[in-house]
Length: 427
Image (cartoon, one colour):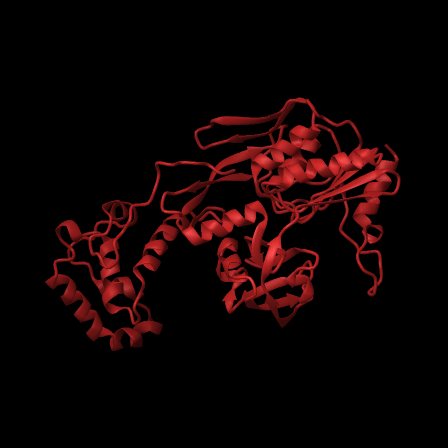
């Protein structure tokens, strides 16, 4: 869900200016009292660091004297933020770009929320985010998902004829690093910046598969990521796989459903496995297309204000349905799953879903940057908050590939799809 706030923007900060915005000093910096010992800020006193401290006394004394001489702890210059900036600019061992420090301040403010889903985006990062949501970007052609507990980044889908497929990458591979940047050290949006880049350039990846690590080089290419795939299975069972909820997903979903209807579809399987979510508006429109009248999901903010998203029943469908899920089914894909479950509109098959029950609003700022902020908790139609626990399937079934080592994947060798066909044949 993208939230427009045109009048909210970041003030422009001139490079090399010591008069940093007062608002940043108020928000980020505590007033520094007289007699502050800078050495105490820079080093934690313990036995292991005693030698470091002793060898650094001269520079510590110089910094403290410099601060005293320039009255940095008095008057208008008494914010801790300004003091830290002064120390970095004058004593850090390398030159630092002012814009990098500015962006770091903004990012640090959001990071202080300790929320893995809230982030600050530079203009370049925000542009890349928007290209992801529209489904067009230059990269390797793989969907990635980050485990917020372990920090691991896993490939959940490899697109056909993509650089990732050509390089031999597979679903389930973990990307340890990209061009030397460790996946575990960054949030997913930051890490993706290293994977993506200009068309025709290479990215060096370290991949982990079955406990073994190996190097892979992918040549980036323009990716137009499909988010809906479909086919007709035996017994007039339609199969629709949704990999992401992007801007065009609803239109593609409707085209797929209507094409299957023309082919004589009498029941349908919705495959939400490895779907990490996306736009709330997209999933709500899909649910409105499928379900009878009622609330398909509702959200609550911290003030207790409730917002309902509803179906009007104009196009609702009335055929047997199954939803396939796994531990990587998250966010908007869980909204879809929870709504069909609560409307008693389908059987859920697979393993317990990820459990992301919060909604983010992306707020663009006038300088081209943006902030993504967790603003609401969402609830399934029955009033359940699935955050941190996920959705338990009606039929719990771990994925098993029914073929041999030399067999390629097909729906006939997917035990969860075969179970769905068995369930639908009895309805």
